[in-house]
Image 1 (cartoon, rainbow, N blue to C red):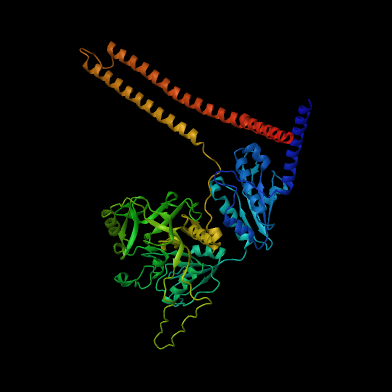
Image 2 (spheres, helix red, strand yellow; image 1 turned 180 degrees about the horizontal axis):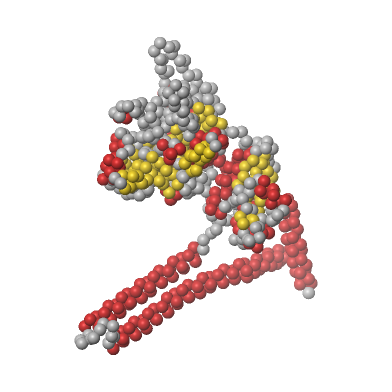
Amino acid sequence: MRTLTTSLLGLVVLAVLFFAVNLVGGMTLSSARLDLTEAKLYTLSQGTKNILAGIQDPVTLRLFYSKKLASKEAEGLERYAQRVTELLQEYEARSNGKLTLLQIDPEPFSEEEDLAAEFGMRGVPVNQAGERIYFGIAGTNTTDGEATIPFVELPRENFLEYDFTKLVYSLGYPQKRKVGLITSLPVNGAPGNPMLGSRGTPPWLFMDQVRDAFDVVEIERDATELPADVDILLLVHPKGLNDQLLFRIDQFALNGGKVLAFLDPHCDADTEGINPQDQMSAFSANRTSDLGPLTDAWGFELVLEKLAADREHAERVAINSGDAPYPIWLNLPAELFNPDDPVTADLKKIRMATPGVLRPVDGAATSFERLIWTGKESMEVDRMKVVMGHSPSSVETILNEFVPLEQELVLAARVSGDIKTAYPDGPPEPVAVEGETPPPAPVAPAGGWKQVGKLQCIVVADADMLADNWWVRVMDFLGQRIAQPNANNADLVINALDNLSGNEDLIALRSRQSFERPFTRVEKMRDDADARFREEEQALQTELENAQKKIDELQTTQEGAVSSLILTPEARAEIERYRQVEKDTRKKLRDVKHSLTKDIEALGTRLKVLHIVLLPFALVLSTFAAYFLLAGRKRS
């Protein structure tokens, strides 16, 4: 009796200790977490941890989630919202007090809903009463900075960490990044000439978006140095750059500077050296981008004198009173974009004109990750076929000579990793202009010129795609330009600059695995059942065809038949036999489906028994075993 009393007392003590440990742990270990998910979905990447640890301006995140309304109207949203909430709580726990998370339930027609609307949160109507579900994030810092995610959409699930970290980064590191622009195209517009009656041209619209997000400084092509505070270099059809500037670009990349380059083997928008009065000037005009020795040193090449052609994804052009695909003008859909890179994951359509082909250099140490590519019905076309312009004859020539390579051609890529300088002997000697004093030789910085470094570069093999006519329709309304985009060309630029504007921690972030884990065993069972079903279905179709053939034979060979519509006894018997076969086969099909359902239900039952009964029972047994083992040791 005494032993039983002692055992019961011990169990009571264990229960009290259990609740006490949970209470104390909840108060003192609130930031401690154990991530047991297979893909470590709740474990932040090292890059995110570094960004959170270095926040310069405290950030407040307001998570607007209509929890009560979602529980009634959108039950499927609850699990996803729980994951988002727990992930943001992890951000707060890892920020050393520099990030505060506020959870707000904007109930219909409340002050909280008004606040959500003020922050630009997007409410989704769910019923006829006009009630809306909100599920967005509004972030602010202490310097009136604001960034939002109007609605945390499920298709962006794999990019949750990237999106949240980018938002925090834009607020916690509020200083605008500086972009250095080097170009041979009139992307900033061109002044008019009143004497000649020309009005000039406005800036290309993509540059308006770039200037909204970044501090842009233009660098002339004849410059010999780069501004010291440039974070990103934007190279748009660079050509004719002097060796001193190329050397500085190389040093910029070696020292951790980021590069976004739009290179082009044949830029239609480049009219330098072309005289409209002299058609033959197009032959001698240089319309090819050129980075000298840098591309080889950085581990990639733009294939010279070749254009990427894709017959399947070609724009259609008017030709000979009809239309035809023009394989070097491309209309590229989302399936040709890298879905795992945040730069291209959300793009729907990109339009390109006479793009080039990118390839990795053999033996390069850099990583060459493609972002955009052609379909397999592609080939390389000689640039000289369009050097005189685009005409019906050039369209016909390219189509008549088109032989698909049955391989995809890379049009845009991310190039990163270890590189060596393209100028191992140091800066090139300054070139003196005739009649002028030679410029002084560049002075090496403390520690000397960099010889090795890590490259972060995104390169696109087309510059024409940035021109307004290739991605946007522009209308004039009361003196203002109204843009109606028809492709994501400008989004590609902003996404790339946005991605590169972060430090290496932000750039290194990639998509994370979905938190929905498929039931692979159930899927295998479904696949097997489908295969069996298809076999039975094919057998039924074969029986049907054979029976019909037999009936036709009986009808046509019947002697003295008045009409093929009058069935003989043999035909009737054959039909009855077929109907019985069909009935039996359909029963087999139902049995296959029923068997599948039974197998899945049985598997579900076993899992429920395992989780609801066996695991808790095993835990209780192990607890008793541990207790009696300790009690036995004390007695001995």
